[in-house]
Length: 352
Image 1 (tube, one colour):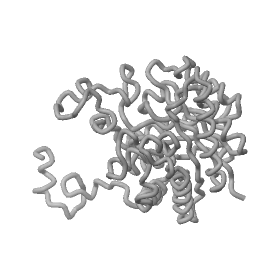
Image 2 (cartoon, one colour):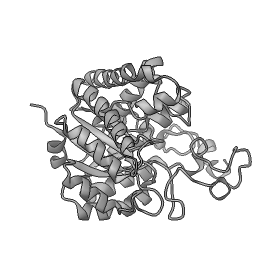
Image 3 (cartoon, helix red, strand yellow):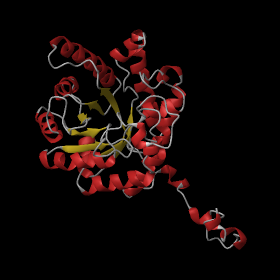
Image 4 (cartoon, one colour):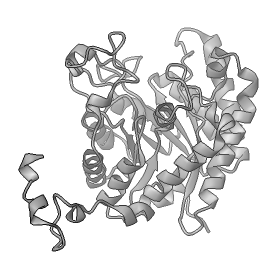
């Protein structure tokens, strides 16, 4: 019998690769700004390929690319009629990709995200959010997902609505907050208090995703781990954010990348964050730190690439399929040690 998410987490860390929005934008298959995942309908083979790359790099979870594939986002670009086929196709792509790796104990998850219409003082917006979440969760359940992630939500009240939609369908729920500058949810709850509130309402896993890089995520993660008794999730963005600018959505170009004068506008988000990019080893260290503090749902969000995921898997003591091609610099003509290398080349290290 297949083990469910909680059983797997009880046994140790699981790795979850995300980051489809940025990955597809960089590849030229969706537009930054609206970030609507039309690619699952227009170029499903590209989504399939990225799923496979993440799986080969060590992800235990195949997350359906339904992030921002909700009614409000599709309405924004005048394509609300594509909602159901987009959702169902994304779920099918994820399941089909997982099924190609029969020897791996993979899980498939659904995903619901911030609606951007939630208003704590507007009951009508609550009802609209509820309908949006409910329809997405029902499609995920019909597809036979192992669990559903509610993520990148910075209102505790909105998370409560998303959680209710997941639990009323009898599904395992992972609830991940995105915490803005000030270290509080939009209502003013600390990250640890918000996570405790959601745990008490039935969330199976609580934690953080997006907005913050590894260090700024870890800053809040320790308090959450101490506060809650359920499993904790941590999926930062692979960017070096700071105390002054803990999130990647509002990074001023003059501070972060002062040597570049060609970036349009005043903010480098979302398409000029390269100067802040974490290397693979930083993400590996983050994964190892999470394991040591008993944070077992470990992953990576917007900006993720397979090489990050692989290094996180290696840090957790694994050798995923793509480990076959793990770097071996001893074979490089300049930096290597092989007897066949010419001394007239290897002696030039300091001159290149």
